[in-house]
Image (cartoon, rainbow, N blue to C red; front, top):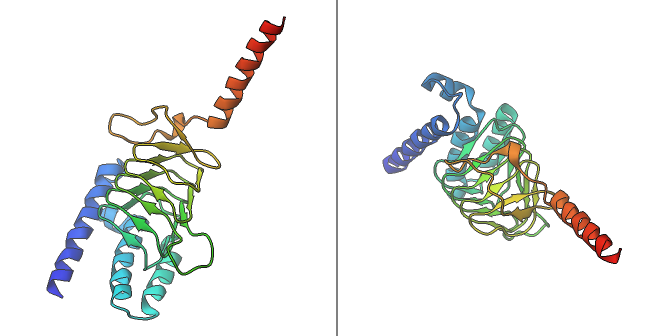
Length: 214
């Protein structure tokens, strides 16, 4: 029991440090502890997840429900979340029961890691390490998001995404244009529109064909 408590404290310290590393608005420890709902939701989740793994009925879901009321963040106690996970702002975040999240993952407000179907098997996404999911993005179904993937704000991802990719749009499409800074942070204001790019290419090809016909 003591070792479990020590591991829990270590994870909380890491969760606090990652807030400082990712949010320039975090100025002091008291502010981080008292004013970051993502941290509150994560601490409550880790406790509920432990009870869930011990097979204790109902209580983990009650903790999850109360946490949603207080923070606006819903994390099912059955989800598996790695270390140094950061939910920035957090309002409206939903993480489903069979979701698996790797280490050093950052997600923003209104993100849904949701399921498809009514089966009892794996039905929620798996996120690798060092993933960033932009505000309002929806990642749905039993799909795999690779390591170092960036998901643009508002995207709807329903297919696997390979490592070191950036995916944007509805439905989500992998783009090859670099839209991260030197630290690997997603620059939300420079996300391209793949549909618009395709249309512009078609327009250019049509103009070339017109010239040839003339």
